[in-house]
Length: 330
Image (tube, rainbow, N blue to C red):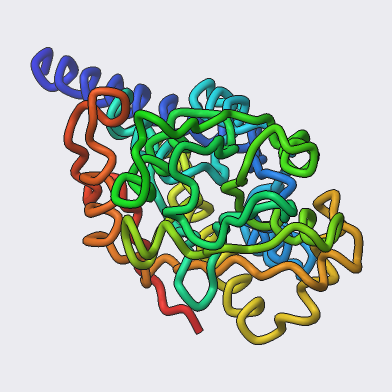
């Protein structure tokens, strides 16, 4: 009898531990009840804007309250995601690859922006001067070219220009985003390598600003060029598996909506960015791979291209960062 009582006590203890564990998990989920999603106030995050505006992010659809956190600076975005202040967000593809190299398995990629030759995001701009004629990339040899801040921009421009100019004699000048257009107009740089929506903003400020080339990331690096993506923390996916799937589904639905309603969605952009309605109507929309459309070989090729002592020092296996959601996207 003592044996059976002892065995029963052990069983009851195990059941108690399991029950406490389940209650703890449930109370944590109930206490949390929210998901923080970080975004840039740029049209690269249009699927987030559309998901919010069209109700795809409503709590009844996601199972959690969605809080959107606006982040203006890419470095702040990285810190926000790494620190766990946001459970998910949009980040540059290079930064996502860095996350995997430095903190393997911490984040999973669910969607990806991309630049194509027909729908480019990057442009090389010049400001026309009477005494200077720049019509093609090779004309920039020995010149000063403005670029965005950061190692990704430097590596990107080196890959684009290495066959066109002598990099040892050509200056790649970092310029903060807010100062880029004026720096070009002032003549402090001979050309400017920029992305939408800054291209549309620049062209609206002076009729002397001209495009000499575009889609350079596609032509010179990878075609198409996956420049950014939406990631979720692995911790959030593990703790909230159904809500994680529903968030991705909501963004996929938003991408479908964007593809079918390009004119309408441009009206949403001014609500989340600094663009006026006029400029938002002119800006080129950022194209996006939905979850099931992500092409891992393309992203792998990109990761391999950025292997360097200054960039990705380790080879990244991009298959390990892909969060493939199994659902029927109607």
